Image 1 (tube, rainbow, N blue to C red):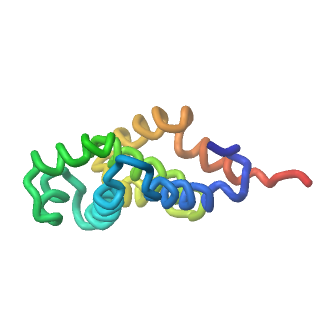
Image 2 (cartoon, helix red, strand yellow; image 1 turned 90 degrees about the vertical axis):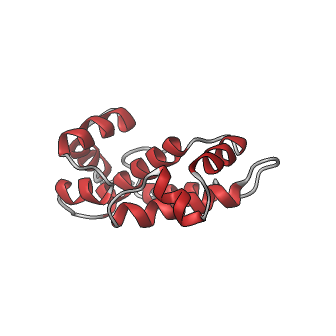
Length: 138
């Protein structure tokens, strides 16, 4: 992935996310990219659920779930990946309070966010932010 002290890490998060939308053989990446985009929109507007994403795509929940499975990914995996990348990016690139990041990543409770973040990064959001802002010695 990247070193937490690497100042280019936020840029790589974005590049990695975009790179995963390049079409590998046999995968329905257009749909996967559409779902990721909708997750981002819906997190801001009250929550990204499988039902809401399917509705926005004009699909049934079952059809969307099956199409994602055919592409080799699950909705919850996409949601978790998006939330974790967004949280890390916001922690490294902004001075937003943790409560704001909790809300922007679609969590209703800070304690739930803290537990999830610790699973993703192996440390708390505060520790991650602090370590990510250590200047790199030349």
